[in-house]
Length: 233
Image (cartoon, rainbow, N blue to C red; front, side, top):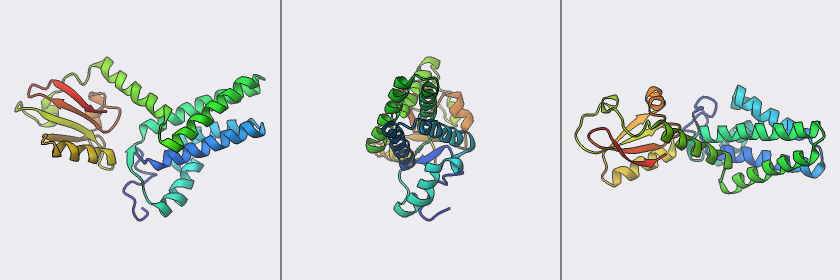
């Protein structure tokens, strides 16, 4: 592991340096824009294929990922560590839209193909510049909707967490490498709250049972196990 790293980019796959996705988005956005400007649409198919290869075979086979983790991160240091699922979902969306653009060009519907390419370029460059990732936000909204529909976080079984009915407690689903998780836990403890953390890397069964699709997720629970407030996630 390189000096200064807390998360290994090729082994700790459930988290990621938050600067990595932004570097990837900048690369995809710029190359998609190059495709539009030059009129060479096969570049869109190459980008879709590259994203798909990275998703299927891992970050070692994602060229922008390799460039970031081997060239950029060692020079500038590791950024905040975050849940890798939202940017992974965003990459899936990118594969679909870039793939659709490529198919549109292949069958002669060039106007649609370039429109889709511009959508990818615009959203990717926006995410790279501001951190506002449309695909990530879609993932987060979907995760919340799944939680609401399943009602999994209306009530918890205290025994699952080694708790007894003795007053309010905050259950925080976390990951040991997640920067936002540590910040949230420190804030909650500073507020005088009793916090019980659940490491999703060690207890994935509890994350699945309660439909936790994003870390940090935190809920305030009464002494009876009823969830009275969702504090994060």
